[in-house]
Image (cartoon, rainbow, N blue to C red):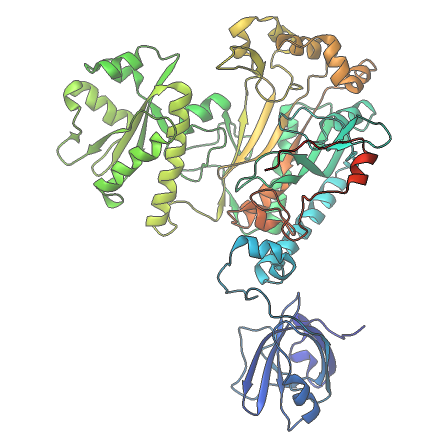
Length: 614
């Protein structure tokens, strides 16, 4: 070995030992006669002193060292002089003065940006182009260590509970996750393509047929989707799991115990199950639970952040009695439309009238017709449209939203989907602004608010074509089995599935379902969206055939490992938790991919490109 110790290992217990360290020059300070160098590696930082009085040759060599040079140094560990200990450094009790030798192992060009824990972030494209340098920064070293710990914990946890870690194919067929596939042409089968798996969905269900009753995998998944802050371009990883002979509560129990144990092991964050504004609906579960309908009606999203309140309240019945024709007309059709109220406490301490106007601009970006509000003053509600409501109705608004002096209540009115969308986004926008104003006191970053979202609709109607299609996962079991599939037309929109998501702090981190393991029911579900049994055989032939050979009831889940790591590390951009991420345009700037390939490679694959000159 070129070194006897890592940087973090040297303490006062090593005094008078002969040691050798290797690493990178983090910082060089020349104090005239004496040279100080901070030697850094993955583990820590050690300050080394080159004094010509101890070793002239070493001092001469160190005079040529620059930032990021790789060096090797040997010396005898000494105690620091009295009063010069540095409690901020693990090596702060010892003095490192080179009295033996130093060696330059590798030179470095001047880095394109400063590699320092406290350096300001530079342009992301530059960072990603030189990602191997970016990863030297303590923040990213910490992230990679956390990822390794998370992976090891996951494998140990599931393996110790008799789950089998099984790798499913990467070159596979298309999986119905409703995103674009990454296709891989087959040289040996001209004109045919593999698809990189969007998820191991079909394989893990087939494992249940094969008597593997408890499967898990840290699975790479591939979807050709546009990237965003919480979705990496192209590839991502999920903690994938499937179990036989389980019901929904059994799946929830496994997930909750796993996440509780992982949080205790890897994070200082606290999982909350009760808040001043919400109790757990089902006491025997550790996490909050909401139906899909409840989540949408109260929070405008199926991934609500429950670390704070700001619940929406339905007030259509009050507005139906208004003498304002616009309000009363919208309120006359509560099946199609919504009028939602959103109260914010202590409003007068947060926002000005100018900011109130900006809020209306904000919601209009999401197709809102406008944004109304009442302000609760000392004497009464203040609002230009008070005249359209009776005193009794205004009092009912106060009572229903629990208004008190200094509060404000916003309301949105229009078609259901539009209102829930923009009011839900507005809720999150307000929370972020209030948190900024209160310097982080509104949203508690030390808390994790896991919330199960259940009872998703299996079917949806295309707003343009009017066609019924699957809302999400076609393999979900209807809540009442095949009996639910006897419904026709719009009645199918009432069918709920044993399908669930897990939300945490405004992110979806888990999805999946209890599976529709009955082949007759599965075929019937596809028939309801206009797909014949022959099409099911063609697209899902392996599953169709396997399900003829006795398939147990089964269900599972997939935890978005990358998003969960984001939450644990309080990171806003998912790209930063990957060792080698792609850019916001889906490019690997370091490896220069995607890139063109040779004509010979294309000929081998029987592919001819037809591209515009642009």
